Each structure stands twice: as structure tokens, then as C-alpha cells.
Image (cartoon, rainbow, N blue to C red; front, side, top):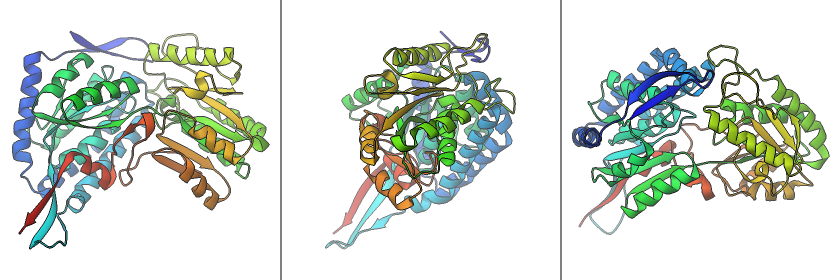
Length: 454
């Protein structure tokens, strides 16, 4: 079987890769485990030196990696460079801070000595998505390897070149051979990886069905998982908001990565008093974004990653319109090659429409009109998801108070939701469980061991 790389801007296949055999898969896992057995005994300073070198490899090759992302999943080239730079920053952050994060903790008890140590688990399976093909991996790999673990990765099938490039980053940086391995396998082979006794845990970023499948299998084997799944992030625009700011924040949040982000702004819940003016300004901002060839420096919105994803998004738009939503911008598939979809704004969105209750993974905004703050909070929480959210208000104290009422793992006031190595990241409800990043994230895949001396 072969894995094909298809350019979503042209529809052309430009590279093919051979899937691993079962024997090759077992060998890759065994090599990762053997590399881990030595790696776990290295000091933090030795690990940090290699992780800093990985950051340098990333920075040196940022343009090349961004070009690869553009060709494989349509990310505009300038956004790809920024993504690689963020990965390098994460490598540096964990290189500099892991020793402190995982320092032995002395606990006072009746015993002569009591302390807690943090030790690596072993080889961790990472099942990764295509939308941020470098960042999603490095936000797991940097802390995971710094903690002393090994890693094997099953990346999304439409970014095979990115998957192999990431493996090469660690090889070129001088990490032990085999410690981080890309597995060129199909989704059907993930169960076999989880069943391997040398694989101790798993992390997945992706869809709800994929998360349930991996978590269910891992649970049957008593292996820990961390899941970051879908989101339908609400942004609440209150009546005291600066509407120019609100329009800018909301448009930027909706259009990031052509709307293909779990933490992209998706539902815009606007208080009635400012609804019409907000929509006017918001539509203007959305319409101004330049859609085009992701390899051009001035492109802001590239194609969606695959034709089937574009078609599924359009069906959600058409169904919402059929149920009473009004399309005030976009909503039509462009003619010509590529899986492009224009910035689209739906107003009059109400319960029962796909635009209200489903995740729209593309540049489609759902505007929901509400009467007041309490109704806005209720609408925000009327979702199966709970990943991120935003509050736009002229009163910071009010924004913090409203943020506390939103059922999600991340809430930003007067700004866009985004991940940051210094802050924990993850969701609640059907957006997953566990945390990535910060000192919380690095402790997800360690053995928190109590040692008592009597």
C-alpha cells in the first residue's frame, strides 16, 4: 500500500510513500523502546542540549518545512514559517524548564524521608492531525522526550512528508537513533501499535470518533491517554464591546488556518443591542481576507486540506440555510481546481441547525443573536464541546467574570484563543481530557512515584 501526498491547491499527487509492513512496524517500536532504555538515564542537561539543537534545525529549515506544509495541506507559506518558529520556541522552553518541572519534591511526613519523583513511562504513541502538522507534534514531542520518554507517531495520511521531516529533525539534532519514529501506517494499524506491550501510553489530537476509538482501545489495555478533540469555540460579543476590536478579533479567530483549527472561533454570540453593527463590521473584515495560492507570500487563506472536507463543510452550510439561516457572505464553492472555500458568514443561526451545534471546520462563521449576557453564556455552554472561547467587552473585570462561566479549557478576553508552551492546553466535555503544555502537560506521561524511607 502507498500513501499519497496530494496538493489541495491543484489536486495533483506529487509524492508517494510506502506503508510499513507488520514486521517493520514491530521493529520500529522495538528500536524506540531500546533507545528509551538508555535515554531515560541521561541527565536533563544532556537532553536539553539536544532539544536546543532541534530548535536550531527547525529555524534553519523553516522555509523548507513551510513549503512542504503548503503543498501537503494548503497552509499559507508565511503561516507555515510561523508554525515552525513556534515549534522551535517550544523546544527551547522545555529544554530550559524541564529539570525544574520534574524536580524531586520533598514531602514532610512522619517517616524519616518522603519524596515524590517523576520518571518516564516509556514509548508513547502520538496520533496526530494534519491541520498544524508540525506544531501538534512538537507540543507533545518536546516535553515527552525531555521527560525521558521515547515516541512513535502515526501522522495523518495526507501529510506524510511532514511526518518524515519531523523525524529527520530529531535525527539531525543528534537524538538517539530510533528514539522518535514516524510510523508510515494506516489508521487500521493503530490498534496493533497500542497492543504492543512496549507502548505504554497514547496521545491523540483529532476528531471525536478517532478519539473514542483510540481511548477505548487504550482503556481496554489499561494504557493512559490524553485527548485533544474537536471544538466549536464561542466568542461572546457584549454590548459594551469595542466593535471594531470585536470584528478584528473574531475575523482573525475564524480565519486562522482557513478555519481548520480546533480552537478557531466558530460561534459568534452577539448581544442584540450591538448585533447589526457587529455583523456589518465583521462581514467587512471577513471579505477582506485574501484567498489564493498558499505558496504566495500575500495569501491569507489557502485551500481546505481535502476535497471531501470542503464538500462536507458546504453541506453543513446548505443545511443551515435550508433551516432558516441567512448567508450574508460567501457560501458558494469557487470554480476551478483546488479545495477552496470562501470566507462565509451565516446570521440568524438557531438551535437545530448544523451551524449551531456542529463543528464547522473551515472559514464559516455562525452568528447567534441573544438578548443579554446571561443568554450569551447559556448559548456558549449549549454545546457538546468545551475547548476554547472568547469574551469581547470593554470591562475587563466583567470579561473575567463571564470567562469563569464558560465551560471550556481555555477562555481569552479581548483576544484570540491560542496555545502557548507556558500555559496548560486542553478541553472538557467532548473536546477531550488531559492537558498538554506547561508543567501540567509534561506530567501527563510520567510515573509520579512516592518514595518513603522509614
